[in-house]
Image (cartoon, rainbow, N blue to C red; front, side, top):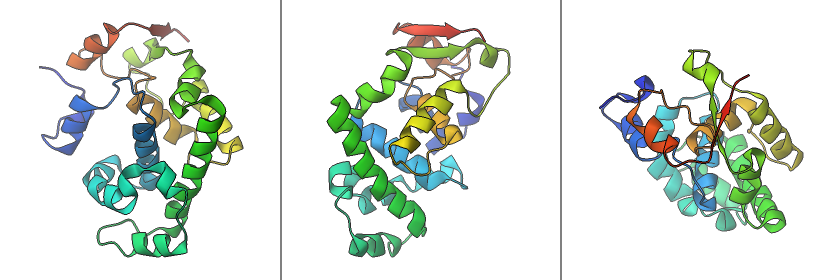
Length: 196
C-alpha cells in the first residue's frame, strides 16, 4: 500500500499520517490541539511535536482550551518546569492567549470549526499544481486565514503555520495522488479542484 513519502518512518509520522493527517476534522478540541502543537513547533520540527504530544497533553489539561484560557503565572511556571517540555515562555503564553481568542471565535460563530471551514465554503481544496510537483508552504487561502486569526489576536500563526494546519485538518488534501488515503478522501466528496 503506497503512502506519502514524507511519512514512511515506521513510527510516529507514519501513524499520524495513517490515522489523522488530511482527514477532514470537525472537532474544536482537536483543532485547538493541532494549532497548539503548531505554535510549539515554530522553529523546530513536526516529528518532535508528535513525540512530545503526551507531554503537551499533560501540561495543557488534555488540550482543554477552556481550562487553558484561565491559566496564570503559576501554570506557566508549572509547564516550563515539566521534564521534556519545550521551555519557551513566549510559546506557552501564546498558547494561553490563543485559547482565549479561540473561545472568542466560538462565541461569535458557534464553533471554531464553523469559522474555519467557512473559508472554503466547507469544501476540501485540491491544488492541481501540487500534483505536478509544484509544492508550496503557504498560499492565498492560508494568507487569508492567518491574517484573520492575527486580527483576532492569535500569536505564532503565520501563513506557513496555518497552511500546515489546513493540510492537517483536511481543508487541503495534500496526500500524494498515489497515496491510499488520497482516493479515500476524494470519495468522501465535497472537494473543489483549484487550477491556479
